[in-house]
Length: 143
Image (cartoon, rainbow, N blue to C red; front, side):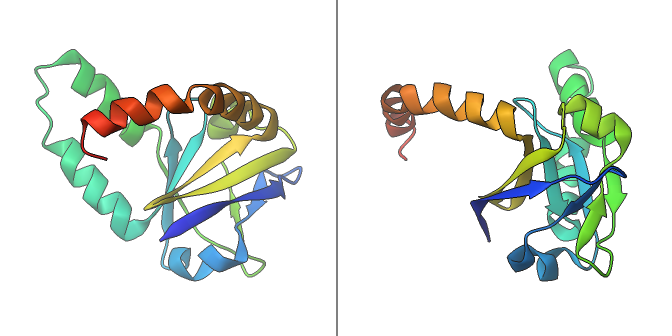
């Protein structure tokens, strides 16, 4: 299970050091893809296969399901952790998430999210202000 918030830096080659506590889970391979809300999603290979299978079963007759599948699948790239515990984030994904030097890696149970530090701070500020409304809506769903 991935949890927590970690500050890291991208080097000039687009390499990101994965937090040490997550490296073992990702050493069999991982997939990074375009995420939602301006971040990247990083999945273990086993979690990626589960998601990809679900996406493949979405009805292609609906434009929103086609768009979501394209976002997730066409934007994806296999990554391997090197001996220093780093992954290379492709240029097109760094541009998509507007990643600069300082990034935040967040654990969200079955995936990691990779955010530009400024983007994460702005997102957190908004959602923390709305946390009461968010909690109320989740309560309606039984959470």
